[in-house]
Image 1 (cartoon, rainbow, N blue to C red):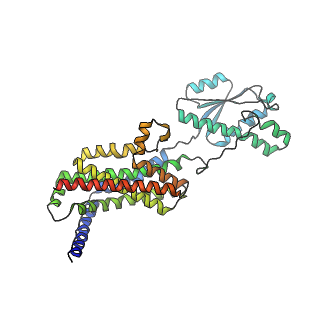
Image 2: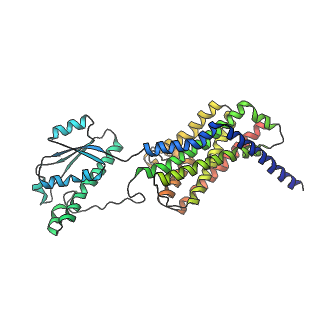
Length: 389
C-alpha cells in the first residue's frame, strides 16, 4: 500500500512539474525559437549555403593543337556543368589567369596531340591552383573525370576496334589499363548527402545541451529551483520534469530536420527510420544530460552558455568527423574525437542515411550512446542531490 501510494505520488508530482515546465517553455518565446526555429534556420543555411561540390569553376583551356580531335577532347569540360572553360591563345595568358585567380586550373592540349594520338602517346596537361588543397583535389578529380569521358564518347559516336586502339590509351597513364571508377553509397558524389546528416548532429547538440544548460542556469539565477527544493518533490522528479519538455522540443526539431533532409535536399534514407529515431533519442538524452550537468555545476547563464558551447557544440563541430576524417589527424586529437558521443552519433547517422542498417555498427554505437546517457544523467542527478543536501 505504501509503495502504491509512493508510486502514485511520484506520478502526480512528476505530471504537475512537467505541466509547469511545458507552460514555462511555451511562455518563453526565446526557448521555442532556439528549440524549433533554430534547427530550421540552421539546416536551410548550411544545407543550401555549405557545399563541397565544384560548380561553374573557371578553367583556362590552351589548344596548341587546333585539330577537331583536340576540341573534342576538351568538350567534356563544357558538358560536365562543373566548369566554365575559357579558351585562351597561349600558355602565358592561361598562367596570368591562374595567378589572378580568374581560373582555377589550366588544361593544355599540346601541339603534337593529334600526331601522337594514333601511337597511344598523346597526353593532356592539367595544372591546378593549389592554394586550397581540398578544392584543388576536387577540381583535379572532376577535370580528370571529364577528360576521361572523351574516348568513350568518341567510341560510342564512331565505334570500331581500330578507333578503340587509337583513343583509349590517351587518358590512361600506361596505355594499357583502363580505370573504371565507381563510388558507393553516394554515386553522384553530392556533398549535401554527407553534410545534412552531420548538420542534424550539430543541431541536436545545440538544442539538447545548450538550451537545457541555459534554461536550468536561468532558474538557478532566479532562485526558482531553490523554491522547488523546499517542497516535497524529489530531485529526480525535478530533473525528469526538466528533461521531458526539452526532449520533446528536441524531437520536434529532429522531425523538421529529417523532413528537410528527405524532401528539401533529397538525401536518401537507406536505413530504418525507426533506428534513426532510436539513435537520435539516445543522443538527445546524452545532450540533455550534458546540459543538466553543466547547469547544475555552473548555475550562471553566461558561464553555462560558454561551457556548453566549449564542451558540446565546438567539439561536435570540430572533432566528430563532420569537417574532416579523424583518421587523418594526430593520435591525441583522434583519441579526443573518439571519446565524444557526437562522433558515434555522426558515424551512425551517416551510415543509416547513406548505407543502410549495418547492425554491428548500430549495436555498438547505440550501446555507446546509451552508456553516455546513463553516465551523464546519473551525474546530473548526483550533483543536484548534493546541492539539495
